[in-house]
Length: 203
Image (cartoon, rainbow, N blue to C red; front, side, top):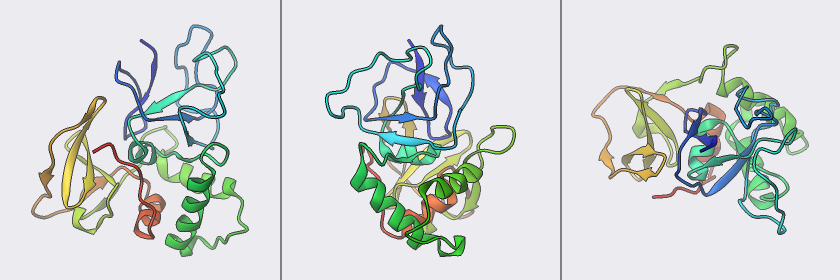
């Protein structure tokens, strides 16, 4: 069983469960198909599982490491964004709504996506490769956002929280009565959700 599935905190884990999307952070594995680094490049993308009948062996030597996500909301929480090749429409929509939701960044439609990638990278992990979070009241968050309760990731959707696991979500539970929770989804992505981007959720 390969270590190639990503959880909402961005950790690369082993599981037999399959995912709905593939991702890329560059070459992360060695010749023995072992993960040796959390990322190689700052461009973390989310791709379709199938595109133009392309076929490739998983974790081939010196080729990018194929990562997998249960759904798009999980990939966003981990710090990825849509690919501009295989998910062109979603990528352009995300960029447009990311710009709309983050006017304080000073970017515009002519801004290269690599500038947004650099912003996302600064929001996803710190200098020690640890997940960055921020606190917010869950009732103030848009659908598709992940929060953490204790050590567990929960997806927010339609006023309920759904515990994430590699094989799917548990039954929804009500929001906590009060207090802020650590938010796993990067802050600027949360703003893009507020601006109208709705991530795919396997609920």
